[in-house]
Amino acid sequence: MALFSKLLAKIRGSSISSGDWEEIERSLIESDLGATNTKEIIELAKKVRSDEIESAITDELRKWLSANSRDLASNFDRVTTILIVGVNGTGKTTSSAKLVANLNSKNKKVILAAADTFRAAATEQLQTWGERLGVRVVIGPQNGDPASVAFDAITKAKESGCEYLIVDTAGRLHTKSGLMDELGKVRRVIEKVSPVDEVLLVVDATTGQNGITQAKLFMESVAVTGLILTKMDGSAKGGVALAIERETGIPIKFIGTGESAADFAPFDAQSYLSGLIVN
Image 1 (cartoon, helix red, strand yellow):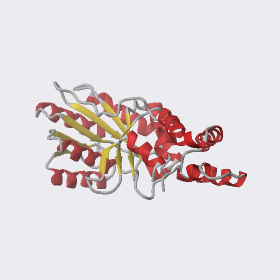
Image 2 (cartoon, one colour; image 1 turned 135 degrees about the horizontal axis):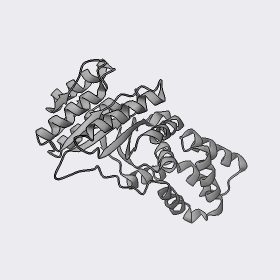
Image 3 (cartoon, helix red, strand yellow; image 1 turned 90 degrees about the vertical axis):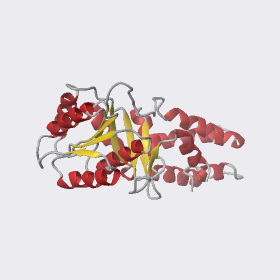
Image 4 (cartoon, helix red, strand yellow; image 1 turned 180 degrees about the vertical axis):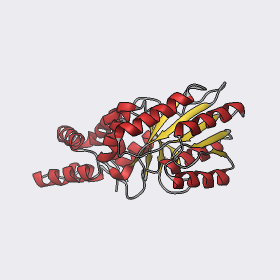
């Protein structure tokens, strides 16, 4: 069911009781729209004529989405470097590989760096993806210096004439300063050789408001340029994309809906809005 279908159905009916409004409010909050955003939508709905409600809500929601570009950075004369950041468990490593697959489908030459050296499983996962996709994966010793892996990767990418370098970074959040210092070091080391063009933050859609908290935490220390929203399948709450873009101003650039490489696509804001309104 579309996120706002219950609201629209009630407004188009004969009358709405206070109990109806409470039910609508509860369903929107449970869909991770957030309490403040929900209140604003309900206030808007109470003011607008029933025959104008769909367009009024759509116009309002469109204002909440980021106005920044959703296009992935690209360069014609040098390597385009993309850091993939986020806490462990959000689908960060899988998203790194899926982004490589997406670029592969466009015949781009890509190198993948396994800079999450603290999780052996992450390196093994990327190596498996690399074999499957036919791309080079630069790795380092377990518990080694992530910045060293990143430096090795950007050097190889530049020497081989690669178009893109995708760097999967560590995601431990047990000490905020430690993780952010580490990400800063990775970036500085890469930029000794070539600029970093994108920092894509991976957020698990099912974590709802906690995902927004994570985004703000990373924004405090890392220049995040875009979001990858994972697990946007039947279990995800539809309002989280609206809430996270309105709260942070960062555009969602890709969404992941499953485990395979095909379950990954650029975020289409217009289709997303339409899906919230129409079943």
